[in-house]
Amino acid sequence: MTVTGHGVNRARVTEIGTREEEEYRRRTPRSAELFERARQSMPLGVASSFQAYDPYPLFMTDARGPRISDADGNEYIDFDMAFGVLAAGHSHPILAEALQYRVANGTCYTFPVEDGVALAEEIKARFGADLVRFSNSGTEATMDAIRVARGYTGREKIIKFEGGYHGHHDDVLVSIQPPRDRMGPEDAPNTVPASAGIPRSRIAETIIAPFNDPEILAAILEAHCGEIAAIIVEPVQFNIGVVPPRPGYLERLCELADEHSIVLIFDEVKTGVVLAWGGAYEYFGVQPDLFCLAKSIGGGIPIGAFGGKRSVMASIETLEGTPAFSASAAGSGIERSTMPGGATRVAHLGTFNGNPLSMTAGLVTLTQILTKDVYPRLHAMADALTAGCQAVLDEFELPGYAINVGPKGCVMFTPGRVTNYRDFIGLDTELWTASFFYLANRGILLPPGPDDQWTLSVQHTEAEVDRYIAVFREFAAELTA
Ligand SMILES: Cc1ncc(COP(=O)(O)O)c(C=O)c1O
Image (cartoon, rainbow, N blue to C red; front, top):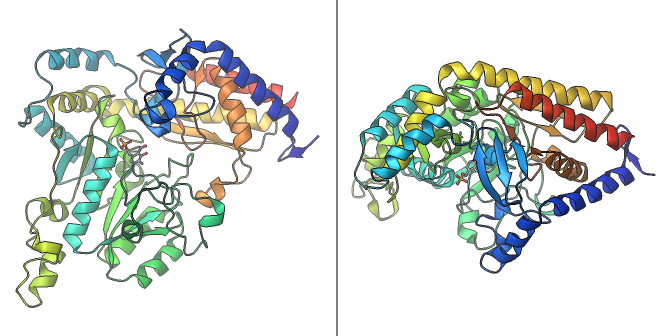
């Protein structure tokens, strides 16, 4: 018998994991069938590689409030909530009604709509921003924000943190979860592409730093003085479980960015309007130069947004008055901008940007569902879920801890606290997998990977939280029986 951590029996973990995966297959033959069919027409049988997991993903048919049903008619309490999109819950009745009108009255004009103006005003108010622009996804939002930062500063390199995820464009699809043997030294991590097909020239533009370590970052900034356009950061690293910033860390990031005249970008795709009414900006009281939003702001309809300080965002109108412009103006006076080709503003485009469907969805979600008064209850429920899971871990002496930041949390199956990606690699993935299938088979649905976390919505209740804790307790009891 192999025993690890605080007495987890490895053989028992394997036994339960195998048994529960078999049970998963037994309960979901229709999903298996659909998966086989899907593989004939889509690589990995899914529309986004994040949806693929072994042995096959559940195919879903219906969802309402906190519940979702699969193609075999099994119902789950949804704690995944579409990778954290659904702080409003599935098909919130207010949103469903508003969208019925919208669907019947045109969903795409490529002319501006009043709801878009109102939504931009709402986002400005929540995030203390001067200007906002819309896109259709988080990927587009971070891609656009980075281009704006480059245009504004006239510099080309960016800094991203190891373990951070900012979407699937080339600049940031690096060092997401690099393998141990390729990640390089802790104080100078390698830029490891997370995909084939990313040109070397792009990889060279992204410098990697460890999260939560301001000294190493300061040294990297010194080494690349005058080269860095932007630092992009998830204020809480929510793509390696839940890794909060150390106290004072975000403030220090701000200072360092200011000292080096770098645009600080908060990627609030997961945190925005979820951690608090004003996202991480309100929750931590730290204001970046730019922020990116997506996921929850649309209540389940595709949308993205980015915004921030007028001085930076105005690069979309003109580069005149930006550091990029003055740098060249101070020189020969021939080039009007340091941009290649002498471009005089930053392009931000998109056929579906600001479409009426997304604008109405965003406006209704933010002004009628995720209103200021809902956050205390969301936090209380999330704290109760964490406390309940922690009590189970303590009672059965399992190696792990429960953690949440606002309505998002998880159980990290590792005895030590995770402060960055390198700690996260120590996670007991076999134990996590066994728990995933055990819970799913009993109607508790989590995201299909230890790098994601549960998200509570305004439509969850205490009863669902209690059910999660009860099933998790059954799992722990069986594991240690
Ligand atoms: C922090 C963060 N930024 C950006 C993205 C990309 O968003 P999207 O999948 O909408 O392109 C994600 C997606 O999970 C994310 O978690």
